Amino acid sequence: MVAHARADHPDEACGVISGPSGTDRPERFIPMRNAARSPTFYEFDSGDLLALYRELDERDEVPVVIYHSHTATEAHPSRTDIALAGEPDAHYVLISTRETGAEDGPFELRSFRIVDGVVSEEPVQIDGTFE
Amino acid sequence: MTGLSSDSCKVLAGTLAARERGIFVLIVVVSQLKVVNPRNVESTGVKFMSVEVRVPTILRPLTGGAKVVTAKGETLAAVVADLEGTYPGIGERLLDDSGLRRFVNVYINDEDVRFLAGLQTKVADQDSITILPAVAGG
Image 1 (tube, rainbow over the protein chains, first blue to last red):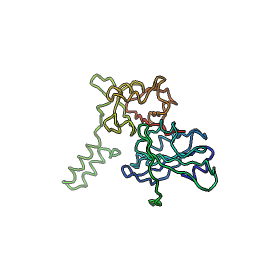
Image 2 (cartoon, helix red, strand yellow; image 1 turned 120 degrees about the vertical axis):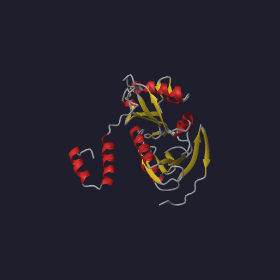
Image 3 (cartoon, helix red, strand yellow; image 1 turned 45 degrees about the vertical axis):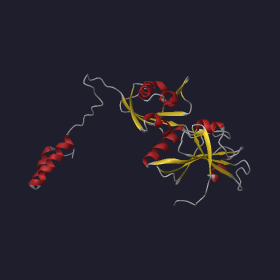
Image 4 (cartoon, each protein chain N blue to C red; image 1 turned 180 degrees about the horizontal axis):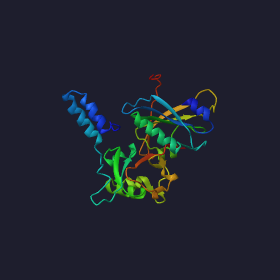
């Protein structure tokens, strides 16, 4: 996620990490194109979105994590992020590249639930991969 | 099975033991039945449009948790109205004063209706409609 965010800086990067339905385990990293190609907005392409959800359905997976980057502001959901959040069961991960841009270095990565306009932050613990 | 002529079926059946023959004949009969889907035709012969609608997680509280529901209508607007009749509140989540909400994507089969005729898009019997909230933000 951080590498994707750096690669697309200064535009916002976005994607999902899917996992088996009902497990809440983020297992499969799926970077998506930002159809908006914007430093202040992201949106999955409409055709890509349908293809993604068809694939998830076929595999009985759900988007466990939905991530995107902020390239000039903190790693916290914006008002737009909150208004448009459409997956109440997902963990919304925000990465900020405002400090280092496309370069290596320290980064901000935070995770939130966004349900009915209410944002709650949750701790992030990196345990390695499930593979 | 469908490629077999009745003569070749007889020949094949003749090579089977009597007990197996009964099973063989039964399979042939079943495979040759024409399946009529009763949803396609009413007794009057008038078709009614029945479509499958895939409902996203965020709207499932309105459909009693159902992921796939059926609805009727000859256009997307009519399907949405039918859904609203069955699942009150769903219409408002899909539409605003200007029509389909900007961050709600609706597909008929594989096509985003924005690239078709929007709410006026014709719906054919057995079409599959998928509703997905845009994944977007700032």
